[in-house]
Image (cartoon, rainbow, N blue to C red; front, top):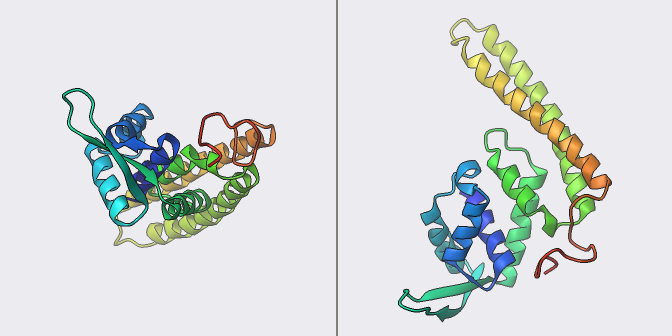
Amino acid sequence: MATNRLLVLGAVRILQPVHGYLVRRELLSWHAEEWAHLNPGSVYNAMRTLTREGYLESVGTEVQGGRPARTTYRLTPDGNGEFLSEVRSMLWNIAPHAPDELHAAWSFSWALTREEVTAGLEHRLEQIAAASRHIGFAIEDFKNDPSKPPHVVEHLRLVIARLQGEATWDRATIERLAAGEYWFAGEPDPPWPGADA
């Protein structure tokens, strides 16, 4: 799943060098199992896959007490590029049936500039307006087709309601960004080590 892939890349970027248990623990502290349907075991699978793809690299193995050896990882240059590409893709493009993508993108939006994040949210507003109009036409088609169950129209209305809820959040967040809330790439005084990497 794309969201889990981004979550693992981003958590490794924040914590590197890091082993899978700490990545898993960090993401669970964000309640990612609820909003991204992150299965804690999938963190390890994602790390293995990302390593095979050349986005993560092993930088050592540590042994503490009687615990099994733990391999530590960091992003490769290609991994950092993939991380930024995924953040941008999920920030700039609405996915009406996958709200977890925006959650994940927002979690790592600090890796982009304030200007880009604002532009991405403005672009989302444009897409939401277009998608809402498109779905409105689909609703009319359903209502005029007696062979379709009329209850399905409510699914489409729910999608519009969710999109309108996001639009409200997008506008409020753009205002908060204009007021200087949060830290973003290229700004002074990064809030944690490696944030400006």
